[in-house]
Length: 279
Image 1: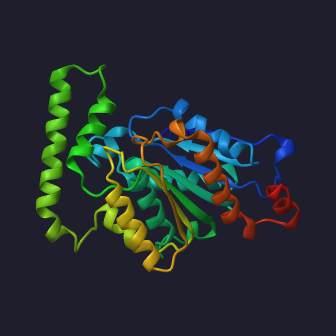
Image 2 (image 1 turned 120 degrees about the horizontal axis):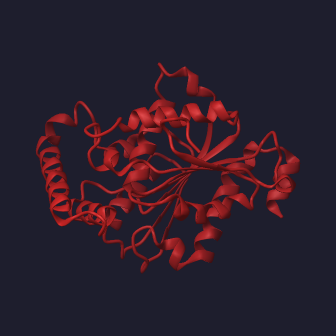
């Protein structure tokens, strides 16, 4: 589906599984280069729990070259939140499930809008939790190059690929070089996620074998968020590669997501629906 600028997919639960007034909303924010068919596999984890599932993937140009080739991520974040009102699900409990840095970068801008005191329009939204899959990472040049190379794939000729990767490396170099100064103006998305003002529960799914996002970055964020007295859960899959934890351990992954989802959602549901979820 599309609203002329925002390409997304939304899936509603079967009538027999849903409570029309309180269907929880799961927002899947995909990784750079992923396709909707990839995110669709995650939809089934939640659809069978009576959830509305909204899937969105940021264009890879917004992730690797923000503000240069397309609208910036804050603009996209606003369009995505506006969409919840357009569909009429703004008062439902909302849980974010974000993948890699592409998902977490967009999520950072979403949270910034939710807590922007000049954006009172979004105060009605009821976010109850966030799941991070293979995210977030902190200025990892090697991992970023690997991710961009995977996004470009074999469909792009070698000259274009070399140019894109070189441009990306140059941008990262200047960001790192200037960060001691610009951090006082704008934090990196990783540092911003450390101190962002939300206090709802968070679950981190990661792996020490991930070659794109360092597990040390994920564990560093986990430690920081716990120090803020936020309820944080985590699971290290140890051997699975980047955004492949569900593929390698489908039962373990699904079980962890569902148990976390139920814990987040229970305080916000009616007694009848809460009872159904516990079954």
